[in-house]
Length: 328
Image 1 (cartoon, rainbow, N blue to C red):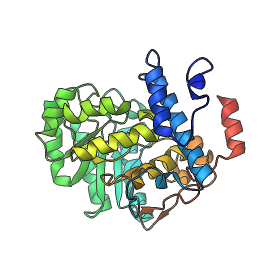
Image 2: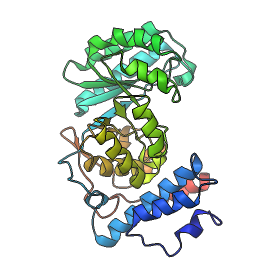
Image 3: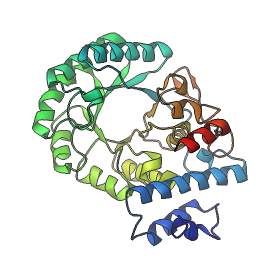
Image 4: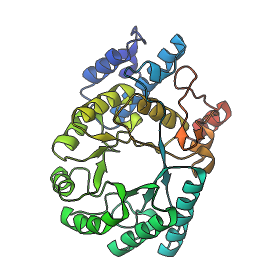
């Protein structure tokens, strides 16, 4: 930072975050095009929008432009536990039932039991995936929207298609990341062959990678992560490009209360955003998620209340910040 982005920030106007983003991106070409460089630019961008909001006394969503939506609809992201398929099943069904009873109108089933990113080293067959979806649908009933995350588990689109055709009867809103991120041709073929929406993009950075995903991969749902894609400024550009192409936006958000708040601000001004990923801090397994911010966003009747305070609208818990910073 001392010889890079920090120098590029000196004497810049924090009320012009888009111009600052473009400056950082343009002048960090040798080291900042992807990876940690874009994550750093994204963190700076989020901080600048927060500062801009606090300086003007407005929540960030009022500064981002566009007509704000009346509310944001969260879906519960359900990460099961268990080291056997039986334990995993029991955990998934319990969490799905909890989400319905809590008041969520939608939930994502993390059925990551096959492939390179499997949970707890489970390696199960496609029949188990179908069975878990079927039992989850029965547990939550016909009214609740369900999504399914399979964590890049298939290496061939034809194999994925065979399973997705078996899943079509369960009224799934989307299947997330069925194929490796770079297999854009596979995504195109799969998206055009199934009635289930295909979602991807949680790991992508900048609008340029999303352009490839939408135009070459032809996915139905894009999932920018505000922190990873490059902050509010770049996320807004992705949202607009998706809207121009008739794509749905459902942002990825599996981090801290800061990320959850930022995602809510983005969704508030994104007319093509149907849901955001969310799990109340009180039931999250991560201590960082539970403790880092002191004023968690609230769900009322299945809807996430928009932040009302200036900036991001959440405050760091100083004690937790010091503890986790020391641990790092």
